Length: 103
Image (cartoon, rainbow, N blue to C red; front, side, top):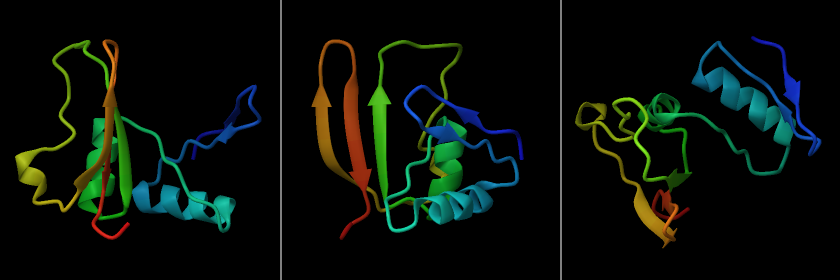
């Protein structure tokens, strides 16, 4: 595990390098009864989806392509049962919240 970093908002970020399940276990322990929020790029999202560890996914889509881009949903990752729960957009960004049925 890498050292943690703090922000001016009193949020502490822990960088966990020993896998998605270990990161989620640490986050749940730190959160207690509160919800857990994880941040990451497309590869991180795909890993949590593959392990079925996400109940809800908030994606902010900005119409800028950096490099060749990276997909969140790959056909080879198998089916997922996420549904669009909310969406909102402006000229600068589109927000989409996906959730598993019943969440």
